[in-house]
Length: 417
Image (cartoon, rainbow, N blue to C red):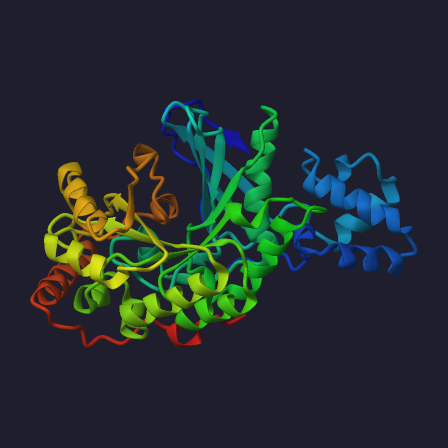
């Protein structure tokens, strides 16, 4: 891992390799194995059960970089483990720091050359609040949803991440924190990808995070975000988890949300909120609604009033976040005064609102920005075509016209494995 000093913007050395030209390492990542699976492997190889516990301890509590450094295990066992499993599915990781080292953006290269991102945010202790260290992680390489204000949407969809590839983003951050005797306090699935389109792997990762034998993070310190995969939300409700569900809503009016969140063409905003409402009623946990504020697009009084009416009386909390600039998008983030006005109109309906100003903008801390940077900038002609399409679509949406474009590929499979 290469770490730059605070407030330095390096030129990353990591370069992606197209998945079609690089073979994927088929050994499973050891962090993706449940304790019972490791015990079964140990038994199959004639090893005592405590060897599995030693491996778990090294994976989840140690600072080793590979099986070769796990000195509690004899050399033959280390060799066997290395042949069977990957100790870390992140082939390489580079980190950028900013905000006086309060924000760390990590770019991870996987075994097939694909790039994914995670962001570690530090919140110092202050009056009435303890010190926090929150990690935003990816669940897919790329994304099929295609929200036009999101840099990941520019990348398209490559593949789902394996359970270990999700968890190893967390292990990488925890190793950095452990060097200062600190511990990760919160994990949010808000990085690259749509978590509920890789639901099985996400649930396995949450189980490992929540397991006291493995990471031991309380469920209420875990947030899963979705752009509105209704079957996935309903499945989560049936499971009854205690982690926080966040909805990337971005607009309460269907014509506009069709453009901002293309999944809305499959599951309209009223259906998404209804599923989230059922989830809140079943779990007793309030829903967080995320809204990226775009100047002149979704930040008007009419948008605030539509959101307030949609969520009125619900167990809900709204987060307003000014948009990060994205190369292919003609929009800019809403000014602070506009965001404040929007917030006040929503609060007047009795709905809690928090304004979250962006961190790490100079290091590309928004979802997908670093990976897009390393894939290379699109040509001016491509950027211009995208901008013209977005301008035309948003203008029609603001007139109340709904798009006739189909929903994104894979949208009908919500909650697939």
